[in-house]
Image (cartoon, rainbow, N blue to C red; front, top):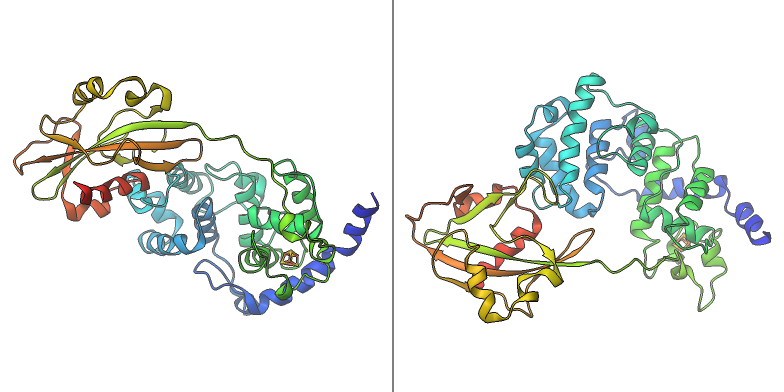
Length: 382
Ligand code: SF4
């Protein structure tokens, strides 16, 4: 209780926001969707469509990766109405490689919903924003704060880390998330809350990093309890405390990489439901739990004939991965290992039903998820 009082006393709203906003005035990152403090002073206001687009792209993806996609999206669909009239195929194509494709589908659904129900304007309150597809509590709060200057608590991974260090929160995450939201609510000022939130994000990216935080350069070092009370075993890096997540289950499958002599590759579309819904893929077997996989149940003599019954085209196939070195990919809820079989075909080979030959130069434009792009790099082993 004593420590709690001391923490609240020392890390107050005024002490944090004044220091942080002064730092942000000179250190803010230049980002294509951002209105800088100096521009704000000149009356420039953030465009909600751009803030929303960037926040959806930044879920699960880093800033450097998002910048190129964001610029390409904006060039194609400069405003909400333009995006609302795009097809799902076009949006998935533009999203290809960014991962977590439900975000792209929800983006389009939300654009349609905003166009129809809100006359292409964004609601300003987090509660209303949260009713739109793909917008959870964090994204709603971030849009409300950044686009509309609402003093609402915004807590992403970076901000949770800073707050847990400022207040020395010993409760492990995710249980500590509620505490972090409460503390962030106490810290967020009524004046310039959008800049404050973005300053916290920048501090987390530049100085209060997960490892080796640069405390001597930090504008909050005088009031940060983790820095002030640091001991060899309990410095800033001790926070945030995290509960170890359970191990991800393992799935496996086989991909058939069919290539024509002119370099075209055989593709098909995934079903409209389930993981990577409606994305484009190489044909292959189902992705099943490891213990139920072909290679888990069969010895090699049995495996090959069983496998050849599933190939999309009859021909000569050979494995280009090895059982111990498959293609590995990590999804949110499971780890995937894929063995890849390669088949070479003549230019005249017709594509089987539900498949098509994609010319080499058109592969870039297909809505191929990262795991399939990775699989295509294995062609060099054929
Ligand atoms: Fe983070 Fe160090 Fe700054 Fe504290 S002093 S907020 S630990 S960078």
